[in-house]
Length: 294
Image (cartoon, rainbow, N blue to C red; front, side, top):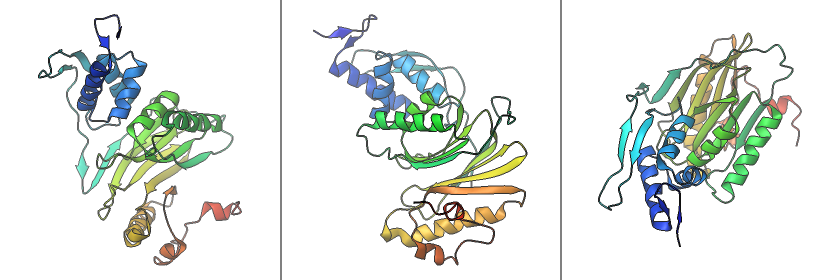
C-alpha cells in the first residue's frame, strides 16, 4: 500500500519520479538535486522549487519566485507555474560575466585575530556518499572559521547542501551552465566586504573552465580573489599554460594597493610554469614562502 503526504498526493515510485522530472524542468538542474530537495520536503513540489530558488538568491541569471505550482495527473499535462517577479539577466560581455555586490550585513573586523583561507577540490563529480562528504566539508569550513574559501568540482547538489550548512557565507559561483561541475568562492559575511564578482571564460577550454574573479576588502585591506580549475590531464598542457597566462595577466592588471590571492585546482607541472618564465615579479608561492610543509 502506497503512502500519502496528507494532501492527496500518493507517494509511490511513479508519482515521485514525475515530481523529480518537473523539478528538473523548472529549475534547469538535475535529478540528484531534485531528490535532495523533494525528499526533505515530503515531495512538496512548490515548496521544494521555492526553497531551491531562495537558496540560489543572487547567484543565478534568472531569479524567480514561484507563487503557485499545480501538477495534473494526466501524462500529457504540463506543470502550471505562476512567477512572482520578472526575470533579471546579468550582463555578459567579451566572454566574461560580472556583477556588483553589496554586503548583506555590517562588516566588523575588530575581533578578527587571524586570516584563514581554505582551497579544496571537493570532488562533487563522484556521487558516492556525496551528502555525507559535503556536510563534512561544511563542518570543516565552519570549525576553521575561514574568511575565504575556494572550492572546485562543485555540483548543484553539493552547493545546495553547503548553502544550507553555511548561512554566514556569501556564495560566488563560476557556474557557466556548460559543464556539470564548477567553482565556488565563499566569503565570510561578518568580516569580508564583497565589492564585485566576475566570471572570466577561458576561450580555449573544452572543459568549461574559467577564472572566478572576486574583489573584496577586509577592513582597510583590498583583496582580489582568483579561483580556478585549469584544464586537466597531460594532453591539454598547452591549453593549461595559456589559461595560467590569463591568470597572470589578471594579476598584473591589479593596482599595487590590492593583494591578489590566486588558487584552485591548477593541475600544473613545474615545466608548465617555466614555459611562462616562472612567476611574474611580485608573485609568490605561499606554500614555499611558509616553509613548504609536507
